[in-house]
Length: 103
Image (cartoon, rainbow, N blue to C red):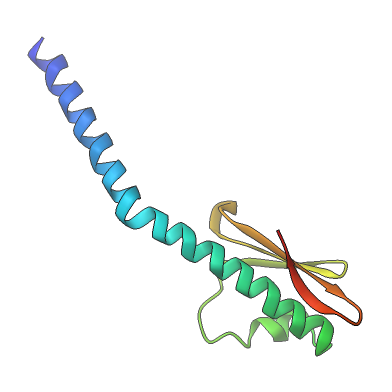
């Protein structure tokens, strides 16, 4: 009986610790990933369609490491996806209007 009670208390403490980590660290990281994917999609869209540069040269312009983001061109759109598909943003080029985020 003491073993079961100890395991339940241990599991409760692990859940509490996980909740605290998510509250103080996880939400901020998720917000950072959402901003990073949106910024990357918009910047690469402008570079690719307005400056008419190749996708791989546009990716080299970033001063921060974006190697964990997956950036692909889909027609006249650029999609940027965060690690493990956590967040995804898409920017679309419209002639005469430029690039804008879709979301």
